[in-house]
Image 1: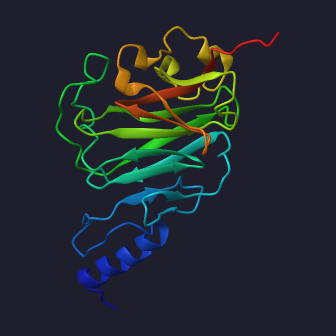
Image 2: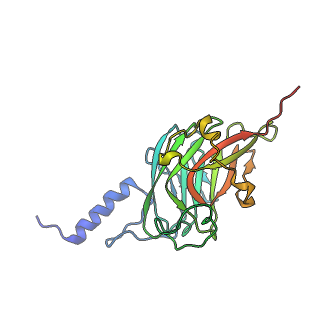
Image 3: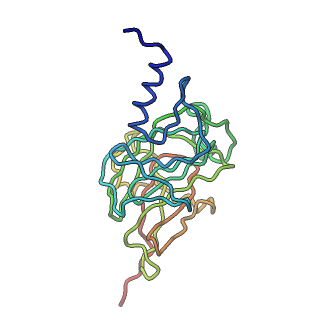
Length: 233
């Protein structure tokens, strides 16, 4: 039986909507919408945005592993990893592969990425003082947009003797996961507190939610750092 191109396109759209409930489909292709999308890793159910813009997620940490997200950079996106999340405003991702990368480029303008792409996130040391995430591919963000990351820290509290921050670490040896989430990574001299040279990258603690929030100007690896503690006599 002959099936028209129009009907085949509609059937493909319906099948795709089962896998990714928030994708916008048309007969001719993917059409952007004005709605923000919240993406959970492929191993989890898709989360949803509440009316206040907050994220409904289970109050648990994601286990160590590798997770993937399909991202449409034309839309507001929220990548959800357990109680951690990254907020990517529409148009914030610089065009991949042609925008340059490195500390001298973080504050330079760029053309936006327009095509959908996949982000791979490696989680290591989840729930420990060495918790870390590595985002691939490496990319930078338009400095006129504000990309933020929420990092859940169970031990974070106003009365804690520790001073928590989040270090940027170049992906070790170009291999996501190598030394990630270990003391070796935390002691690596290439891991730096970017807020020392750029105050806009300092962490903001939310003690009620046990979350550190900081701005991101690029994707690579980020590692939790616990320091500044005092010893009671």
